[in-house]
Length: 366
Image 1 (spheres, rainbow, N blue to C red):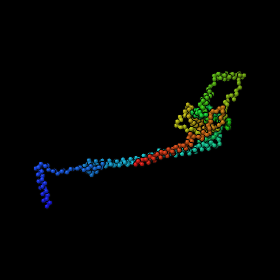
Image 2: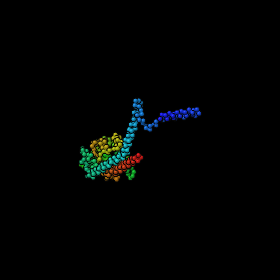
Image 3: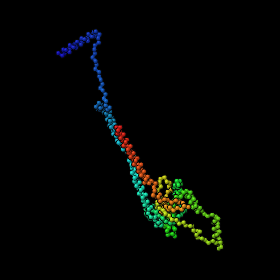
Image 4: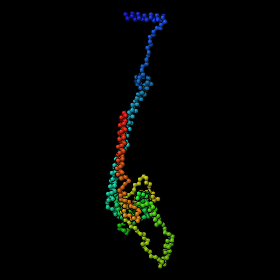
């Protein structure tokens, strides 16, 4: 039944097409189907299933795409680790400042203990220099002990250490420390038994120049006229009336006995900016007891004291002895260390606060 109907319809269509052709009407054509290409995939990395595994080029391409994906993931992990380290680095300056402040705390306590030790030693009763022997092994334990003794200054062996500045009535003047050996007196029981180096105090430059000129004049030979007179007197020994009695007191130099009140000290510790001593040219920039004793012709273990006698002759004010208060002072006092502590701790707190604030800003941006 259906086949017969389809045949009848086919026949009608053919007849209609023949009639239309005879009348000049173009026959209707069946529209051709439009072949559409499949939509491209939106994936950046195509699936390896699209490539034939039988081709080596396709396999290599798939491997390169997989390696690129792994590299990008490892870079992301590296950035995360780097950001963590950068966060910790923000706290490094604050930690350093905190450490410096703590170090100043210990430095301040050490300075307090040192000054208290010096003050306690200075408060002890003075010792006699004649009872202190250089052969003692406890010379370091005697430092900052007050001592007194009598002797004679040997000015020819004096040494000037400097330059050292001193403020006088608000005016700073350069000068030197005068160090002279105190020599013993053989017939005096109260005299020192061994030579002692004494820092007699500060003198201005002009005073030093005059002192050196006086020593040079004393060491010069006598005038030729005086020498000829002495020779003529020696030749006239046969003339008893022309012979003058010798007075022993005229030939013996007057001995100026002095009493020293000082403090036993050690060598100075120069900074890196202080030049080295040059004993050959008599240039002394800091106190080196062993070198000064050697230059003065004394034993290396000679005691060194600093004069603190306040009984200064107004008519002869130089040398100016050291003040006792200067012995319990330091270039950096405990109050200075306290200021350093406050400065470093404040800086540490400020830097740490800025680091926290910076990290909070980064979290809010995310």
